Image (cartoon, rainbow, N blue to C red; front, side):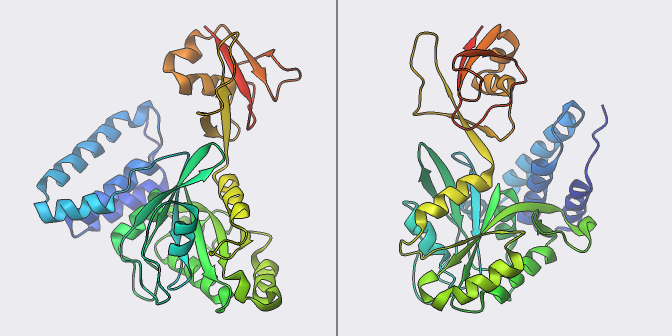
Length: 324
């Protein structure tokens, strides 16, 4: 079976050949692995990439290996979002307010020097947020770009009290310089993009935006393309932000029950929106979908407990009972 590699993969492969340091090479290989199409035709190539990553990692000296480990953040929870923005926009305060993480928070710029992950609770699931160093006039370090590329989506934090339109456009331009784009905004030349991300624009310091003048300007220019949420990191509108983050990930929560039992509402199956009953069964156990004789569904079925077909498209909050 042919690999059918995408232009984005081939661009990442070219970046790997041009990489100068071992850490940069590893980052490129990981990017290739993350954007490679997943089917039988790429199994051998996927294994080859993992072998190269392992060999390069083993070749690192202790100091560099420690540095790499500190920059690699494993995905956890229902989704991972990189929190990016210009200096002093309030990224760290937002992450601290939404999670139990403790990034350095101060009124002066460039407080954040490392990536700090934290888990945000949304109802009965958790979503990972990663606070990152600010994007400024200086080119971002490779590991920051790697975090942005690997994340499921982006939170772009801007300061409503300080020319937010210019801040947002600068961030968009900086991403484009690194061949990254936002899927809601079409670039002049799509072929230049290697990575495309969903994004939510968090307009911080709402309390300093007199009469919402700056926020209204942003809505007028970008409101039909980007989701904008105006908040104060000190606490105003944070519940609205949590909901917007959940919706940005475009996921659903599915609950399971055994025959005669009650649904387990504590530990949902998290799937992409549009997933089917068969895909939900497979996520519980790889043999479930194959052995499934029939299933009943509560929620999006015409009637509670009705038998549903394998290709039934599930909705957030559905309960399924699989019979094998």
